[in-house]
Image (cartoon, rainbow, N blue to C red; front, side):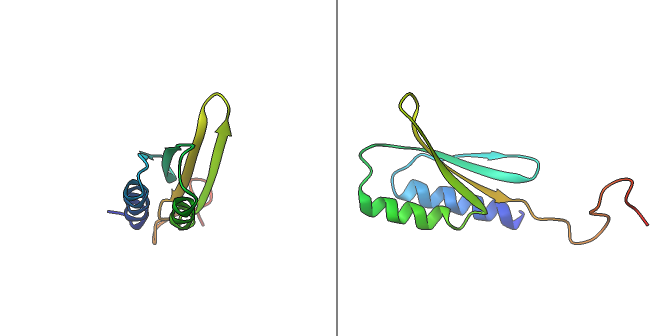
Length: 92
């Protein structure tokens, strides 16, 4: 299991522990975690939530009157340690 998946799963588990329902999705270069944030989330829980998502490579909050608030985080997948990481056409 790649280290980034462990990190993403850990973030999702910790968001669940504070009462959110995270969704985890695998992408080519990163793993994303999203969770709807209720209006009734207490201020002290926000502090905990921010500490959790701060461990991700990127995070943010999407808010709109129509769709409410969605917290998101992204954890990059590990880069291969050996081999050609530059891609085709860039070989020596």
